[in-house]
Image 1 (cartoon, rainbow, N blue to C red):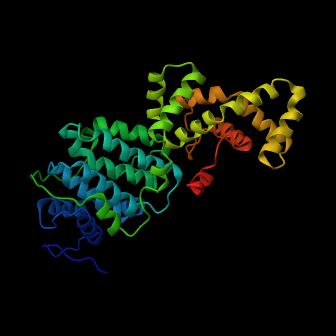
Image 2 (tube, one colour):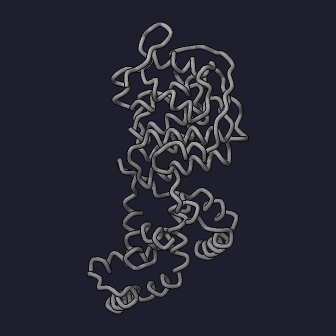
Amino acid sequence: MKDSQNDTGAPTRYEQELKRSMHLLKINQDDQIAKTAFELIEKSSDLETTLQHGKWIIALNAMAGSCFLNQRVFSQSEVYDLLTVAVTTSLQGRTKTIDDMIFRIYRDIMANYESSDEKLKIAYPKMIVDVVAILAKGVDTRGNRIPLHNLEHYYQTRKSDVISNTSITSEVPVAATATAANIKSIERNVKREKLIPSDYKESLLNKDEETELVESLTKITDRSKKDIQASVDKLERKDVLRINDLCKNYSKIEKYSKMIADADNLQKFKTTLQNESGRKLSDHQVQHAVGSIRKAKLYIKNVLDGKFTPHGSYGINHTKHNLEYGYLIVGLMQPSRKRIALK
């Protein structure tokens, strides 16, 4: 499809993506927000930017820039909608790490957006587009390359200082308003993968399970319930599930710890593991499991304290990863795929 033309007769780049975005967000294509967005996309889009970000990010960034210039304040549901549209149109591949980050942003918006000051609300659309651009290509719309494991720090920093860091080439400060559909309507219209996998809600602990987890962690770490609850509230979903697995199996950990305290009992430990798991284990797997069991309490404390800092381009802490592999061998943790299958 050829690009249509604006009032001057010049072709309007990415008009199809911009119109589609506004349609999904229920923004009137005749109001000032739309007009400013088309002006921004005319002035800022080029081949290099297209190759770096893709047409959808460019279109959404123009619309977000227009909202910022026009001092347009989004409601909480409209911010949800924008994040949904950005993710479902711009992310070609999805990993567990990316899904976890998206989910945490949703949860943060739910908890904190309504109480944010107006300046932050005005800047939020630009921030959301930049975060999704990083998830998609590793680069925000200003050309800053951000490793995936630093994205949450980037997000929190932008929350505090996004307006002063936002650079837009056009100034058309006119007040405008628009209405957005709720998140369910958008998810029906955008024919892509659903944003939040169904196992998110199903896998999170219910109130009784979380109470039991806090009580177990209090006994294991000798910390107060208040401190434990505060630590658990900050954890990523996957880490809550992993330490919950360990707590449920902590009596086994104590039993195994007694076995491996004496080197002469390692063969007994191996036999016990093989009988309980119903499969043969190599000496390497047994030694790996022994190392993980010995450090179970330290692992739990480090997870609660956020000490497993991700490294490398894949955002993995190899010490944490190796310990968890040991727990998987022993059956003290469930692999993610098995957990979803059980659901």
